[in-house]
Length: 207
Image (tube, rainbow, N blue to C red):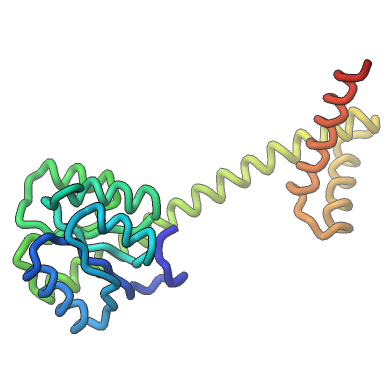
């Protein structure tokens, strides 16, 4: 999910605003700042579709647009594709700010937008997004490690019961199997659990 270039560098930007002059101004500023504009969209639906096709690194969205507003689009763009959003709007309603924080909005700019304001907002938004992505990755890795530990523990006890060996010996067997087959301990444990389930299932269905 997220950055299409596979790095932590911000490069490719999509713009969505139904005001042509605003789009032109943003595109010109982005070009001056050496960013690549992947597309200009007139509404939220177009922005969502463009994100699915082009996978930009970040999206600049107006709020009040036809068909699908910016916050609705941001929810899909970030929730489905993990692409961060910066809102560019003439409105600063506190409800917009609260909603935006829940749907992948990492920055908020009030029109008219200067080039310096745009550069600062995008730099801060990108840094926040990277921090958020790192935190999510760490949580996912921790969750996976905990799940792997549970699987290894279950496999170990299957060996203890089936082979009538102690815990230490069972763990050593798991570790040796992993080394010999160049697999992770968790993968070996999963294989043991799958085989055990097949054995139990077979024994239950035998005539």
